[in-house]
Image (cartoon, rainbow, N blue to C red; front, side, top):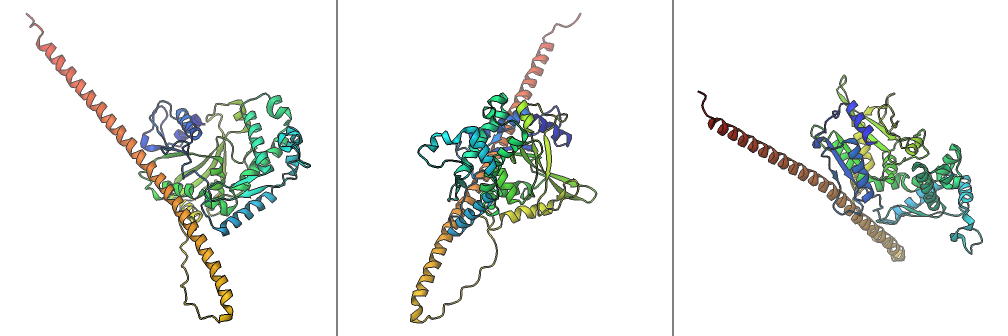
Length: 440
């Protein structure tokens, strides 16, 4: 994917073939886990071999960067109830019973250790239990989680080129069966990360960072290419938070294919003198992954244009950049990154209550006190999350500035050394000529 991306960028005139791009023009930022940093490094090596393009990440390796960490920060009882109801409702829409029945047969689930001493043990009829705990990712226990883990394993077997008789013991034989079973994996992502309230909550730091790079930053000084390496949960929640319309990805069974890219492209309409946005999902087909295809402009990955509800696209997939900026701002309304600015009602002095209503007054006051406490706790957690995300963003910028300063110093030192060596060589040459005997 890295080599193809370089060719595509050169085709668009963003970089030049045969030479390294200026480090100011390419910025790579990865979540601070070993696998995401390694993915970013492999991508850079493929896209810009031999070039000085650094992979930026926070110092604390092995811990989630707040920008990429899709966790709940609203600790209020109201949000918890809303999130759990939304995840349960999304799960009800999945209609996965036939897929679970097929999966049970493939793994002989009734004979599994997990079913010991249980009168009924199956995936198709068991209940899922969802959680939305403060400081943690949305989660589920039950058949959806078990099924997702199993299909993850079978999908990777297929992509890694295992003989077909070894992929799920040879029991997934047709594209139709793959599609049916992959609905479990897709449903897992949908139920946990794409309900609107949950998506806006967990994707807010990422949306805010994207806005800071694409909208707030002066485009004349911004990198031409910014690459962010995170997780499928980041993509799932981001697309929902931005209200991307329903989409289909041909020749793959996943909604968030492994190694895929969501590409935000800024184009300029010279005739009307305005910037435009195009969003594309770029991904390898299932066969390209399995066959280990080398991608190029002649053998490209798939590109599918995505459409945002709040950014009306033309027939070619372009919409107004100003509308895109509004979409980003709307996705952050009411989140820690951009609190809602609705005016608060003025508190009126309470009227004296009859003695007979004292019990009701105290009960109402207790309810109000609890709501205020819940809100204060949620506001505190939200402020902490916003501060962590902001600190991570500032750290990334500081690291980039330090790297650029170090590179400039290194280049100056090299130039000074070259100039010194050139001057020394010229002096030696002059001395040699002055010591030569004169011709008779």
